[in-house]
Image 1 (spheres, helix red, strand yellow):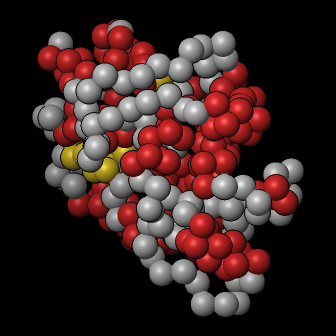
Image 2 (cartoon, helix red, strand yellow):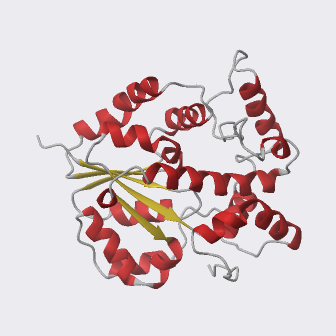
Length: 276
């Protein structure tokens, strides 16, 4: 049996990962997942980012999870669209020497607003964040349970915002997360060969069929024109609503994540509203 070609869509989340999962799942020869084995990978990712788990231990776990899944897949291509893997790129790149990575980004204002409005009960709420911060401060204590709401990174001790973060409100924590996870992705991918990675914006996938064609070509897949239309329908949206950030939120986001917005090509752009 020939080994499947592995690929990973990494992002901050709320950036179209579920949408790409649906599009790619519709193609023949693709076994596609969205946040595969998330109760394993999310705690593992946070532990790794915070230096609470060694590289060799991460590799061992990924080998028994993603490695086994790819090995036993009957599809020509095996993919996982998961923001959790954004923190584990070096280990995945080592485990899969021919694996490919798609860095999917979206305007951070839309990401932060979406997390805050739609997933506020499972993303950086005050109590869960305090539990995670307490565990990082004292790893000898009982770790948080493997529920999603607990396992969101806090700044490492050498982060310039580590002190301020302890006083951040929920929205500001989410803004920090968007900027930091994209920084980590860019840093990790800079160590890989150009042919193993693709940078793509969700906004381009929605307005330019050539962007989607480029994604298919990068993965060695053949898509149809009908796939482009899928990006104009909501996915992974429990409450189909959208709005711009408030002025205080916009100021906080710019202060925390403005540099990353510029780095990803969003400087000077107006915040848009998604029409569902």
